[in-house]
Image 1 (tube, rainbow, N blue to C red):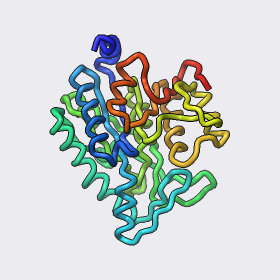
Image 2: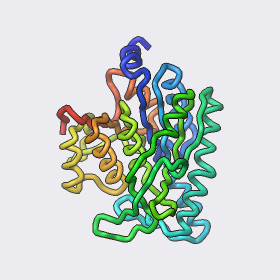
Image 3: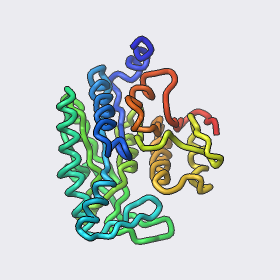
Image 4: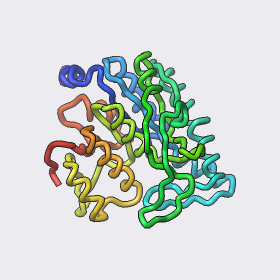
Length: 279
């Protein structure tokens, strides 16, 4: 606690956006430690905002309905039926479960979809080679009023990664992209992307504890980042360009959020928008 005090003073009253995904989402024990961290941060005066996806559960439900699952550069190809499944899983199942868990752990929370407000206005996104991804969106506009209203009321906003298109359709949006867009618009002090790997690795497979924005962009340009790390690192670069410090950490490690934010050692990889990296 003594080690944490300077960090609590530094970030008190500031927004911290956390994206929950990977095994930390799927494992109930790991998920609860993440939510405990958020409740504690709220109690000591930080303003956490939780963004979630639900890839595994969407895949499982789509499979049960006989729908094919296909990815392009880490993004789910989403036809109309898959979009219906995604909305049902994200807003009808996962968001209420997370809100209930936060209440059970002593906090207060309320769920939001990017369509509410709407908080997220999106445009249709294509793959890197122009592939048709269907109802996959990229965030064009963020209206933060709903999120800020909840934080002002002492609640933890829980945001599902669905957006409203300018064409009036619902779009599946990568949760890392949503978290980065919110962190940018909210001028958050920190963006934490929780995943199921220890952090970002270089071409030699070595874990990098700190990256400059230029280092991170080079990993993408050189093809070192692959699969699900592509949208994650791209989202990190988006937020870092806006001056947000980004942390990619292993959500399976107990209380990794507290270790990263409130200790001297930290865990995972930090993308520093101003400093030099160790790549």
